[in-house]
Image (cartoon, rainbow, N blue to C red; front, side, top):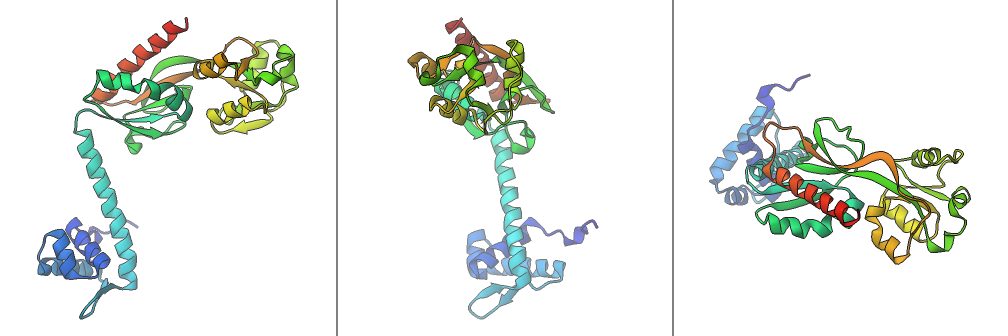
Length: 297
């Protein structure tokens, strides 16, 4: 049943009631809100009349919420917090040079963050805010200006810019390197939960018989890579993220890189007025991709 408009309080009455319920005093609430005590009292009385419920027990020394008042005060506090957060976000979006970016944990920490100083030197006027997210989400609802994404660019309401073709290769700890490709069928295979069929695709592309299901499944790439370097099995890892370990011999590749059909993407919301900071970040990111590809061509 729709809520009648007569039951919707004003923000002023909610603020007054919430302050009195929290502080237990009309006087203290008035001081906090920079109002007179009588103005606060009128707001609370109007709210009680509007709802038809007594919200506060008014004692000579202390004001105490009733049972209904305590419950309503909690709801009022949550509503005011939501409105305040939304107001801050609107003000932030009207302030030029703000960019909220959702990053992938491993790609963000191993590839992106070390390069961010170059971005800030080029764009010192932009302030970055980072959030860690995996998979598609509603960027408008999450108030994100852009997101880094691995996989397919099937993201409703977003525009995709390809950064890298996703290429992986089977890697093991040095102690497990003997035996060539044949050893893969005997070793525990490690996999990412979001890519349960990647090993099968790799086997088919190399003319190998079907492989059993993975022996260990991980939520995050970093955890799988750590397990691989610890000798727990063989993993399909993107070499561009693990070049240091491969160069130091902490990981050993058993076969050349293989394109798994996925990619690393920068996703931006489809909007009539794109965030200029997001456009600047996209342009810079593409120069970094070109730099990466040139360095290891």
